[in-house]
Amino acid sequence: MKTRIFTYIECSCGHRGALIETIGANAFRTGARHAWVRGLTHAGVYDGADSLFAELKPGCPTCSQSLGPADVVGRSELQGIDEVMRLAHEPRLPEPALAADV
Ligand SMILES: [Zn+2]
Image 1 (tube, rainbow, N blue to C red):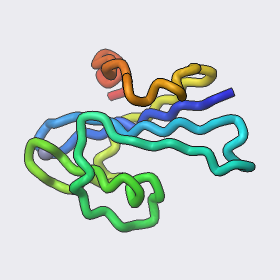
Image 2: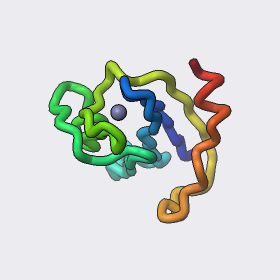
Image 3: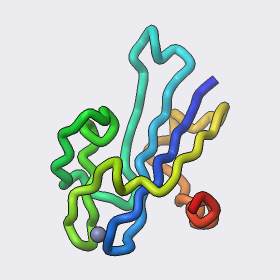
């Protein structure tokens, strides 16, 4: 079973994006974890205790502000979605999911 975790972020300027992690069933044995950003840059400067933010260093493409855990507005998990092999063709993030979490 694969787990995909969406961490939704809203910048103080109103721009929204997400951090996405895909964790495989054998993650503990293989260390298989993929994480990437959607709608954000890697221009942030976060270097704190949150390993996801420290790895991705998300930044806002609109105002160039560095984003951190304090900017998280929601989280959701999907399990058993067999999309691990299609990372290069991510479907667009459905906006209604964002609104429902707020
Ligand atoms: Zn911004």
